[in-house]
Amino acid sequence: MSMAVFSRAISAFVLLLLYNFSEAKEILVGGSADGWKIPSTQSESLNQWAGNFRFLVGDSLVWKYDSGKDSVLQVNKEDYMNCNTSKPIEEYKDGNTKVKLDRSGPFYFISGAEGHCEKGQKLVVVVLSSRRGYTGISPAPSPVEFEGPAVAPTSSSTSLQGSLMVALWVFAFGICLM
Image 1: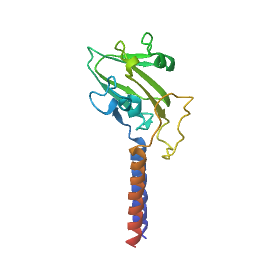
Image 2: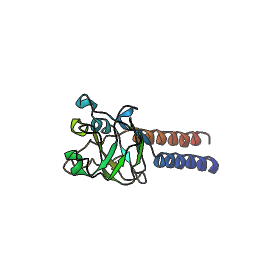
Image 3: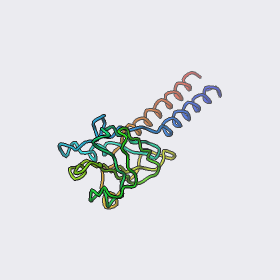
Image 4: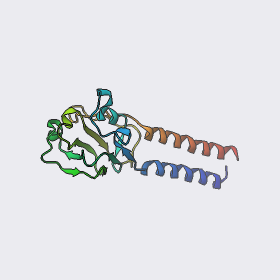
């Protein structure tokens, strides 16, 4: 195999890895423009929805809602559990809220509309540490420590696997050209 082909294969592999590990995502809460609402069933709960994602430092959550009727409050765990709207960490009322997940650990959100949190309009997301060194395998947080959604694998690990397959193909193809 020529050194040039080998060098190109390694460069392609490194670029694919860097792309996958640095791609922050904007995630629409509830998966749709009307996702920030009182769930009609347990299977429609926002925590059920969040359990299908792996949230990483640098990702952003995006809420779409009627600013005249609702808001998003970022709260601590105790206020989340008790639906206490009186002392939020942050209050968002613009109808198009974007919150950057800037640290690992749990983030707690509740509706600011009276009675909505008690009816299930609340969300906890568990953010994993940054993508650097991310292997696609991480332990789930202890249920005692976080009372929120289970951490489930998402397309990030699939994307990494796909990138690895492409890099291996490029490498193998380079060997065949010798």
